[in-house]
Length: 315
Ligand code: CP
Image 1 (cartoon, protein in one colour):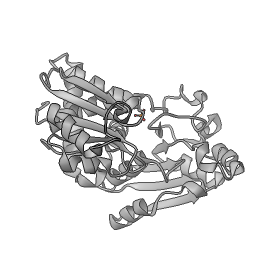
Image 2 (cartoon, helix red, strand yellow; image 1 turned 30 degrees about the vertical axis):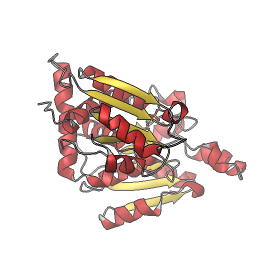
Image 3 (cartoon, protein in one colour; image 1 turned 90 degrees about the horizontal axis):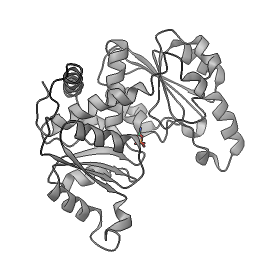
Image 4 (cartoon, protein in one colour; image 1 turned 180 degrees about the vertical axis):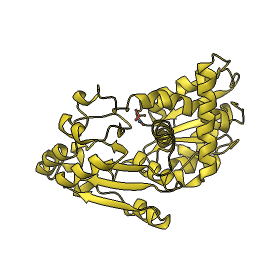
């Protein structure tokens, strides 16, 4: 994995995924046993964020610093650099990669991480490229599922909300397709259905999946049967032409106290955050609501990943 760019979920096979999850375990063990964690002393991370982020930016920053490394934050480079007047994105990547040991990139354009990786002299980690992919968030989700369910093979997962524009859903589905016995359900408003690219990937990999559109009754069946409920926000901005559809959709695709009653005792609610109406505060106290636990899992996962990419063993 040394010097591997982390661009999209399709690039990994199951063995590589298990290597990443094991690295997270090693970091977690070190932390719990108070063993030294300064594995990346002397290394410098360039956190290159063209669009806003709280969790990914902060989490990589903390992960690098906990490993003894340093971080150079480069927030909204188009606002202070000459990128727009000449040179462009590629030149920015050439400059940044000449100065740091690896780059985490958040960008508004699909495919930007691949563009960066094609010219960067150091590894590039995709921290979210437009609506396309967010592989490290999905790795965190995968790690969380493994820990909560005792494994990933055989898990049934329901994706609920805006499935068309969710990069974390796409990345996680692609990861899950490497495992056996996975069952997938999609539940969304008609305007935000899961993309044909994701459905095609599941078909190619022989993963059974079902889809429910705009249907509150079917959602109840899905919620009561799945092992994992993976929620995403339904943004009002996607419904500007049909505000009445938004008002109806936000009521359907929402986990509240009533739906908690029909969930199995060992079904977990996940969400990449930020959350909105789909996950009201009344759900937070339920032991099955694990969306804030993901932040802690994420720290171990991203620390392990940084070590792997920089070729440093966390064993
Ligand atoms: N989950 C996530 O990617 O959050 P941010 O947009 O705050 O990084």
